[in-house]
Length: 218
Image (cartoon, rainbow, N blue to C red; front, top):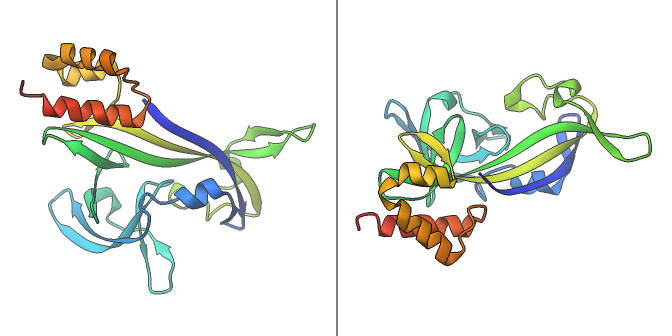
């Protein structure tokens, strides 16, 4: 279930974003490159200063020249701990863990989607008439760097909450609440009705999940 979405455009010139506040302010998940512990699926750990790219959902590191680089262990990553934040990588997405009782988790995915090329319509309006692939995307991991010339592209920012159990993502819906917490369905329904809980509102979901965890053994 989508809890937050915002749209805008970016202007790209020779593989670099020249305009687009939405993109520039949200191209990374973390507020800065932070010291982190990276855990692989086989239990191996690495440390380094990283951030997470919201477009490609990949780790980024800064080299000695100040350039951002990907890591060659991306497909093997299980979890990343950076500062006070913990992320699990599930279905190719970095999920920030918000709360858990050790079995079921509440997590959030922050992602930017680079959409279609925005071109001028016959009356000066914009018309999304061309896929991003038409402007020369060669590698999804470096899509912007591989766009030749100039282009104006749509960008969508999403922040979605999910329940997580056994490395599976469950959208925040009444159906999944009943599936994951069958013994508490009546209590949950009563809480939502009393508190006017809206599953499209971030804070409402966090309060509901906290209530469920605090009363799970009752």
